[in-house]
Length: 449
Image (cartoon, rainbow, N blue to C red):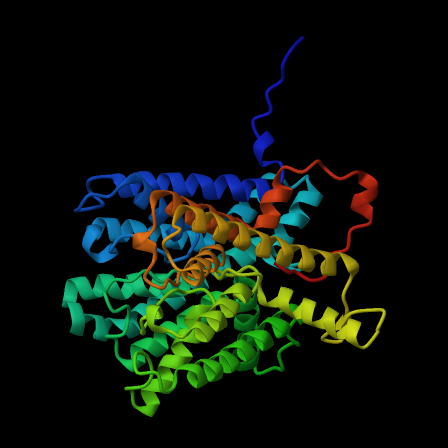
């Protein structure tokens, strides 16, 4: 009896390629951080693993002071991990599409994971997105450069400008100073906010907006209407930014430890900044350990929703939240069908949205439970906040991450990994292949999760 070896067995589906690719990046990143060239002080393998996972999963959680522990080479390595991690889904899906051209089902699934519509030129999309990403980050670094030079000098300031631009667009806000980014000028905070929003609206959305602007300004023609997914994503993003900032300001306006001592313009800027980065970036201008409990719950809600599909942001995604709200509205109105933006949502989309939310709640619940077992002395709300931040790859912390036990840090590693690859994607990665009859029944119309 002959045994036949199938070398690509583990990557027969796009989600399998994603899982294997992210694991590989994390392991390579951990080994790189453990190199003597990457760190100055003692760095345990647990801290290196957490830091590498946080970078690859574009989170921003860290159990060490990155500026003190990592050498300049280590900081560059960290930025490279963030950059590769931010583009991992896009590049890995492209690799599967190119390697599996004969597998039409696999190609369609790879495109769906990114929110790419049927008929789009994926090769051209990849080239445009990579160019656009690099351009946005370089412009952001140039805008941050004067402020960084003011704080750190020419050489270190240039490195910090590029590092913060990469972190902001990649939605991985590692703290380089003890006070977060509070020492930056308002113009720099606005630049970081813009980079975070651009990174969180999704690569496909960025490409569509860029092409529409070319049609309008270069060709002088009326651009085509934005796709349903782009319109919904932008509407939900705008609503979350405005409503979140208003609620945050109302909750913290007079609190002495947060917004209270600041002037009105500074209060408004800090409220807008915190709610912008709360959805996935992890930067901070205020100490989250001083926030009121209702404010922490608000931020946890923003983290849970996250950004758009196919973006560097985490969470259940804006489109998932929109679909579930539309379904709730239909139930309350006793309507048979669910409509969103003038379109009927297929049952498969509703089921996927519900599954994404259910699995997210389950993962966060189990993660919080595990943290309560490993770090029983910590406040339950702080542990729950940490679990939500890790799973949604937001990177915010109430100053708890460095004080967790080794077991607690490993729980965060698992949550960040699940949040980046998607709990649903992980479960689907090694499921039995559907029968041809089931494949014919599939509907693909709207990306969620």
